[in-house]
Image (cartoon, rainbow, N blue to C red; front, side):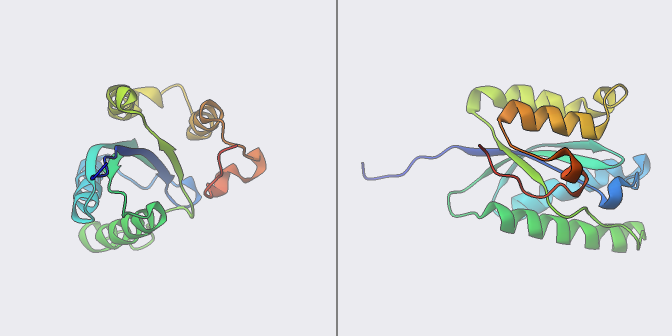
Length: 156
């Protein structure tokens, strides 16, 4: 086969430092737009960005040459600087680590809808409960004692 064909999509989730509710409603959409723009600037495709006051979800398409850890590092670094400069929230920071799940083409519409409904979802479900359910559904081993640190986890 003379060419390489790939479909690499990830559902990314990461939280604010100490899960502080610092992503305020008046500028939340601007942050989501900035995150999407950063993904685009890194050569990825932002399909959905959403979240609530203490965490964000992204559905992104990436190239085979992209390193996921590098994308997340740059995404967090750039968006933290943006919040500091544009919003004036000097204490804003992201929690160390992240969760990343591969997404099949057939699941992408459902994930986009899930991300769009974050506000509604979190009226009844905490971020911790949401994350545990996502990890269990994906078959990711985790120790609940360390969930608050949201470090990169390995699939079984």
